[in-house]
Amino acid sequence: MLSKENNEMLTKTGPNTPMGKLFRRYWIPALISTELPKPNCTPVKIKLLGEELLAFRDTEGKVGIIDEFCPHRKVSLYFGRNEECGIRCVYHGWKFNVNGECVDMPSEPPSSNFKHKVHIKSYPCRERGGVIWTYMGPKELMPELPEIEWNLVPDSHRYMTRKIQFNNYFQAIEGGLDSSHISFLHRGAGGQGFMGLKKTAESKVANYLTQDTAPKFEVEKTDYGMLVGAYRHAEEGNLYYRITQFLLPWYTMIPPFEDTPRGAHAWVPMDDENVYTWNINWNPTRPLTEHEIKVLKSGRGIHMELIPGTLKAKQNKENDYLIDRELQASGQSYTGILGIQAQDSAVQESQGLIADRTQERLGSSDTAIITARRIMLKAAQDLQEGNTPPALSTETHRVRSASVVLPEGIPFQIGAKDVLILTDEDYIRAEETDKESLLHHNETDSMQDVK
Image 1 (cartoon, rainbow, N blue to C red):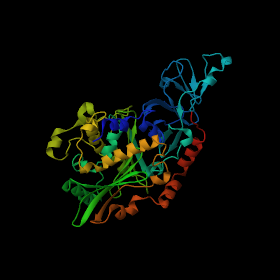
Image 2 (cartoon, rainbow, N blue to C red):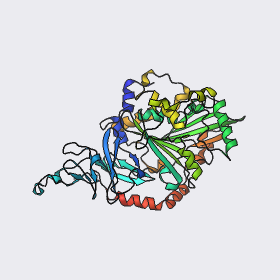
Image 3 (tube, rainbow, N blue to C red):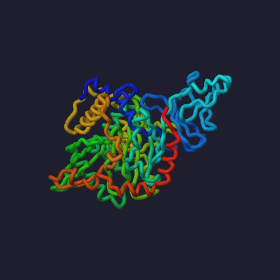
Image 4 (tube, one colour):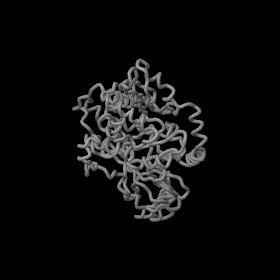
């Protein structure tokens, strides 16, 4: 369990908090690019690390993330006009560009030059991998964009959604690292629905998960975060390993199955009590098929159907996640709740906005969670002492999760070595197949600055 002080340090993410300062040293996935589909489109409100912001795409296609509120009378710029390379406040006509500069102030005499003295907070934005990224830290310490695999593959190879989850970011991360709950919470979920040619093998894996409900955890700290190997007994003399990657500050990679799309999450704090849950599936070598995309959209896996016009899930706390008690009683579904992400949201949100971790009673199956807490707290404390945060180097991002059956006695780090690390060839292929996206990213980068 955590002390009250450490629990507060772990979950508080505002500008002047240890964890907030740590998070501002990384590029943050802010929006999916299609949320701002074209120049001069409707702006989007976004809250990141406790800051209320506004994202917009200007007339030239550049993206800005600025303070939501006009500095004149603190009116929301969401109601503003997105026109001629800026957001114009409808109250008195003040207009701001993507860099937060006031470029027009028609309510003041032109001779006053007052507009040149007015700036609002703005953060640099870049686009890559279907994501609008922003950086909220010191300009001189800005790192390179992340090179996590799903961020480099072409759009046709990837499916991505995000939603609001009503609990603090680390409760969600803990769920992503907890491999033992799969034997219960997701039992009867039928995986993500990818059956057919892999049915026999899928059934085999399901048997591993249900027959051995007490996995043993082996955790290794890394220079990017943590490698978690959770093993269960398979056939005689063999162990089934689910190997999860945790990359600071908030990424988890889900152990895959055969040729089905790989999966990952990013858990980005809106504030101390709420999180944007990013859900990503991708195939590194080929486009996703129509069938795969249909399955991903079905709600059975890590993506949820949203209330139109919002980032709120249709299955939510207010309607008890549409739990079907008859289905639960039948044994066909352990929870009676449809979908892996809905099941995760139900238990994580039921803990409250910030779980009281001083009251927990943790066991050996919580090894990964305990280690992750220590890693995060240490990173924040080290930054306070002037040390560089981990996982800023793009070389540390070249990792994958894995699911493998290994002979007993073989360390998973050795037995699964070849499938846990991306090769140079993997990155060359990704870059060659996504040159247009990367070129656009490089062009738009150079146009934006930090205010």
